Image (cartoon, rainbow, N blue to C red; front, side):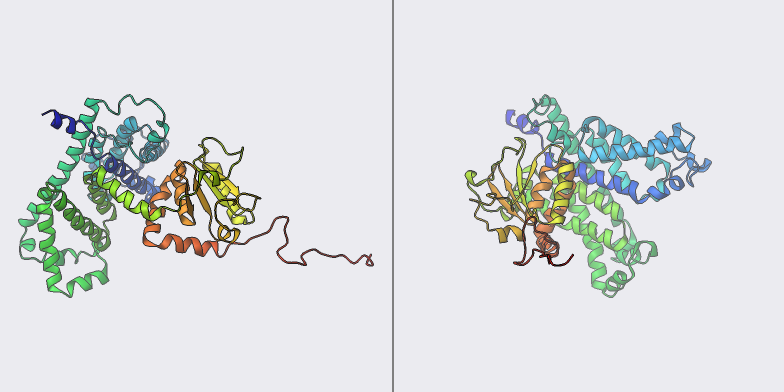
Length: 445
């Protein structure tokens, strides 16, 4: 009994919850961004949706407390600010509540432009209020380093967190189960032709994809029955670790197909992001360690790390850049401006003695930027250096997933090498050729 209590009072799925927070935050910002130019038309005081008829279907909304465009602008831009704070994981406890209120309000103003993913997102956002979503990849986590943690190991807080996670999983199961049961009752789903009729809706299809699918009766029937089977079995497949990942391996491509074929991108991404909470912390760590081994570079001796009295004590990464490269200098300056915590320090490898003891020649350093983790004594080069910089600089965290994926698929190195091969090098106080000095003829006046 005690072991059961201990197990349930230990926070679960904190990594998945953090990913869920970031994913939802990006989707919410996407909603604001793509409709920003049309915000007055869609949600403003005199918008298309602001009619007496539409008012009958509205519930609570912050926008209903004002009757001017100025009030609308204030609430709308506050919603964007709250969404940014939510995505970054800053003051997450109170911001989670505010983010739900602001998003629910804008959904109520004009539900006709939504695609269905908003319903499940709103429900899950309620549960996220009780879930610790800032345990990873958050400003709160960054700011709490070295501070006494008052609530992180509180028994009751952990219980509430786990109930919140469980509620999200149950909601996901209910959604899939209900969806499959409604499909089973439909005649076109029973006879295996539902996908064919779905692809005939011009607003939700790509013509060339429709042509390919419609050319095969087997493919239409297979996709139709496979969709029902996976949604019906999904809740039960979560009971076993192996079948859980089989289920995820099936539903994620299914939602990608919906996004690609029908164009319901926000809805599909919402479902995929929620699925992230089903993966345990241990499995996330296994994946991280597996790929981290691919990222890991050679170890160097602590004595080989460049030493300088100018390096702040807060520095985690020392970057060796090309001081003769104008592009490199611009990148360096911009990173230094946004590195408010002084985690990254730049040294030009052209300076005397910088490369001594590292085992890298000037020609090698000229080809790729070098980054040295002075805490782990790890050496990185090229796009791997940028990945390490993005991890240490909070304002560049949004780049980390893209750099990570780029490295995994092999595009990161290719893009980096493409840019690096085309940069210019301007020697400072040096001559690139033997006769670089300009000799003036003294006989000419």
